[in-house]
Length: 427
Ligand code: FAD
Image (cartoon, rainbow, N blue to C red; front, side):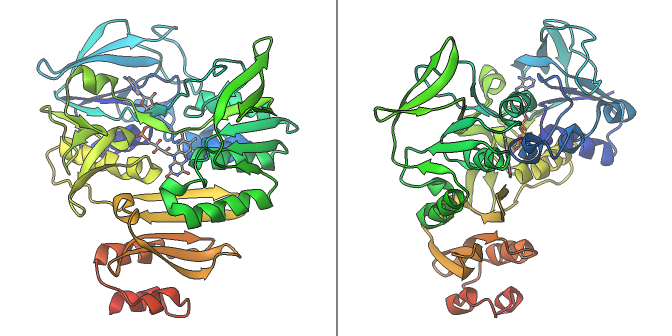
C-alpha cells in the first residue's frame, strides 16, 4: 500500500490531507508536526484568539479525532529532522514527552527518536518561523514573537487583562494587528518602525499612511524612521526599548519583523531553493516524489511567469489541495492570485494582487480614503494588477476577475463608484 507523508502542522498540511482523502486516496497517510496541537490556522492568533473572542475550535482545522476517523496517523510533538529523497525516507524525532504524550486537544503523542518513515510521496508544508532580531535584551522575559498557538497563549496571558504598556518592534501585518487587538484589550501601544511608513512594502506609502492614521486615531503611538538600539530590563524582565537614545517604557515587547521559510529539511535534502523551496506550478520540488506547499514554497506562477512565495492564509488553503492532487498524479496547477485579508480596529480589508507587479504600478482610488471606505487599485499600463477593498464588501471576486482578465481598463470608470465593476469587465 502507498504511504504518503505530510510534514507540517499548518493549514497547507491540513488542506492537503483533507484533499487526499476527498480525492479517494485510500493508502496510508501520516501527518508529522513538531507542535503539540493538531494542524491549525494562524490568522486568529493576532486577532480574535488573542482578544479572547475565539477559542481553540476556531483555530484548529480538524480535531485529532478527525484524523483518526480518516485513517490518518497524526504525529504531534514530532520533528522531521532528515530527508533522504533517494531512499524515500524521512527521519523523525519526538520532542520532550516521547511516545504517548498528549496534545492540548487530545491528539496522539510523538514517535520514537531516530525512527525512519518510508514514503512513496512526501509533502513539505513546514511553513515559516518568526524572524529574530539580533539585539541586546531580546532574550528577556516579556519579549515575544508570534507564530504559534503557544506564542499567542503567552501573549494573551500578558495582555488579556489590559493596563500594560506594549511596545511593538516592526509595523508589518502582525505588528499592526496585535497593536489593534492590544488596544482593544485596554493596553497602551507603541509601534516602532524603521521605515518612513508602516506596511509600505506591502501596500505602498499612500496606503501605509492610511493604516498609520487608523492606528493614531485609535490611540496608538506609531513612530516611524526610528532606530531600535536595544531592549532593557531589570531582574531578567523587560522594562523598555531604547530607541535613538530614548528609552520607551515597556511591560511587554513583541518583535514582529517578519518570518523566514522553514527550510531545514529542504536544505538537508539539497532541494533547489530560491526564496523558499522552488516548486513548479504543480508544486513539485526538484526531488522526485517530494512536493511543497504553503509559506515554505516558492511556486512558479504560470500567469506572471516567475516564482513567488506567498505568506498568506489563502495560499496555504489553496496550495495544499493542489499539492495533494499533484501527489495523486491528477491534473494540478497553482495559478491563484495572491489574496490576503486583515482586520484592525473598525477596518476590514481584502487585498488581491501580484506584489511583484504592484510595486511599480499606479494607485487608482475608488471611494473615500479619509472615511476608510474605498477600493484601491494598482494599475500597470492600464491593467489592474492588484486591488484592495477597505470596508467595502462582496467585491473581491470582481477585483480578482479584473486582475485575471488582463484587459486595459478605463481609469475614469475605475475611479467612479457609480460605475459597477461588472461593467468594466464587460468592456
Ligand atoms: P504554517 O502555518 O507555518 O505551518 C507549518 C507547520 O509545520 C508548523 O506547525 C511548524 O511547526 C511545522 N513544522 C515545520 N518544520 C517542521 C518539521 N521539520 N517537522 C515537523 N513539523 C514542522 N494570513 C492572511 O492571509 N491573513 C491574516 O490575517 C493572517 N494573519 C496571521 C497572523 C499570524 C499571527 C500569523 C503567524 C500568520 C498570519 N497569516 C495571515 C499568515 C498565515 O497564517 C500563513 O500564511 C499560514 O499559516 C501558512 O500556512 P502553512 O501551512 O504554509 O505554514
